[in-house]
Image (cartoon, rainbow, N blue to C red; front, side, top):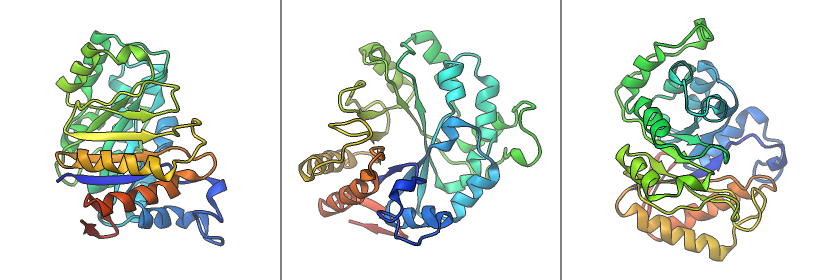
Length: 284
């Protein structure tokens, strides 16, 4: 069976304090706390700006040995450059400290804006640039430009490990057989995004793992998932995990539902016999 990772998108939310985070827990220990309850977390700050190697190293050290982060690719690449002229931006992204996560580096998530329509040539050129191993990523990072220097650069890896990539598109032009076939050709996971009907919800295997983002099924970013909905998602996750690894992240964070829904889904998948890694042990 594949390994199941279930968590949240980001972890620093003031509204969670006194709710998911116990009252009195200092902010600097929130990641430590969240990672003890969940099995993976998406790093969102990397989407908005290049982070520092020291930050990635700190996040690595504050989490359990068996923990995994997904890292969100920079919007400078996806939203501003729109996947074109990305040689230096990609090098800078991987040089900014992503590799400092070491064995805790999970999939890299690329989220495209709704206004970016599918273009086979553009997407193919970008997909071919993505490093598929940490050694390839380190070589790419070594070609960073002068925007990064000194302690802002981490362009090495302690071992050669595979790097997986996932794509969350928001233009319906990507929900075509041609685009999905191209994702499969490059072994890039098609993100199954639940967005209360706002953006495409495409359930298709295009890689050797599954990547799911749950933004809310009734209200985008706001609504929580009912017990019945979580039961249904648990059944789907368990079925997928019979043949591949599965990553699921709750992004319905506005009212604090995300971490509670993630914990509830973990418990349901465990009861079904799914392999969920948490706090140093595997549960079956």
